[in-house]
Image (cartoon, rainbow, N blue to C red; front, side, top):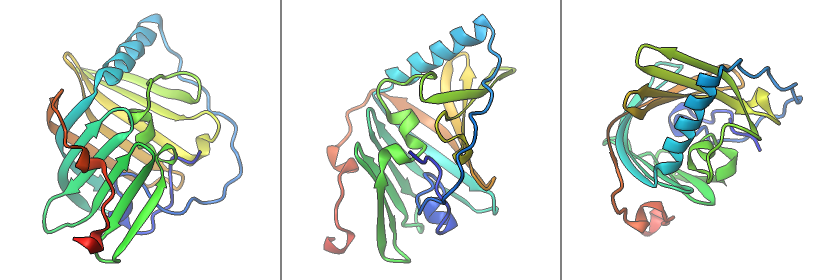
Length: 212
């Protein structure tokens, strides 16, 4: 299961890195971060917090390695569903329907589809959420009121990393950073978060853009 895919173009791949995977030689699992009992308790608190998110909306601003930026709105319905809608004039669209992630590129007039489990979004959308088993926590740090947790896949750690950033009090997801296997970085910062609302099922359903 490859989380991190080579860019086919920076804009289309910027949130979920959706493109053809590169072949690579399996790397040895990286060392896990040394966690104190307090750290382990905090990780469990974070897992419980993420698990408790059933629906969420937020605005986002993203930045990629080449300096490109974009903004828009994100909707989440756990487990398995997420939608990124970019602000005009950007017409890029990405959404997950619990099975696949679709990305529509209006310039190329193409819709790409990959399995949800093959994207970094899967960690946040899966049920249950856990920091054990198929992921390795490689970094856990506090800085003021901020907590950062970095994870990689236990089976394919060379495919990249996902770092989640939270405010600690209150505990709120504020940002995530994806670093792919070539060291390219995508940062997605969240604001105006709201939780627990009813969401229209059509947000997460595939519709042929040519039928509009």
